[in-house]
Image (cartoon, rainbow, N blue to C red; front, side, top):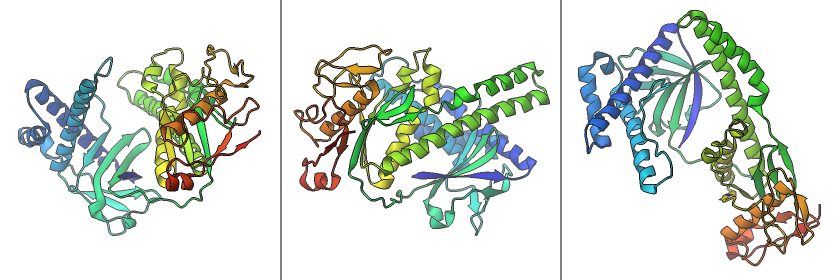
Length: 406
């Protein structure tokens, strides 16, 4: 399943109706959560039935389509199920107990309550909320998919307007890309966004840091306005637009870089970082969130499927401390940026870690044995490995590797 997004164009009264639908969806979700908290043994099916009672009890809730009410209940149950899952896995710390929503920004419809025009460029919402017909602005073509494939339709409010998302149930169309026979390991960082096993580095974009001065200025303007006034609401909107631009810049950077990495490499090993735990370091939290490592990792997986390549997450334990040539541990603090081993290996710290990540991934996939790897790469910097994936798939664990000096 994948998502197509369009911007909605309509009249002010239509936007007001969308906001009313979003508030109603939030009300139903919070009511379902309270119902679950007050009654033991309630499941997702019970919450769906409870939405019908809410529609009879509250006239404004009856204006929203029945499937949209059920989707709100399913959102509530999804949060509850996630909480139970975390409890069963015994995740340390907070388990994510469901909370009441205060500022929900979307309403979701299922199969009914909406209809597309023949040219697929307009969508009409047919429930009692009176949203009406909205024009869809975007580059995606919905003619390639049947109406039965559209599972959900979401209306989302953002700082720069309203958007409509279509959740389409379809297999991802693979893009034909010639195999390159290359494999790399990637080590994430803050000084550089990543360093690969070939020694190539990509600068960290730092979109938030570059926009921080403008964001502070806009925040001061918000603070100077009178609470509840139209000028304050306008100032908040300007601030939201700036934050939205920063997030879009970060996403654009991650998508383009992940596509480039997966297109020109057949096998990519990357760190399986626990970003949620890393941001507990308050000195580095802002820089870690600004880097967007998790976003980049998710898009690597996406393009791996799209291009028919392999992307393997690897635990990053001791990858910076171990020598990529002999395997001995060389303890070093974060301030030491050069790896120097008694075997004669002298490498950049991140490059050494990237090579270790690649070797771990190859061992994890069974492409090389535990006795091979550290002896394949010497101290002179022979870090470029080429992997014939077709041979691996045909012969199991047979691997053709070549080493080229930098």
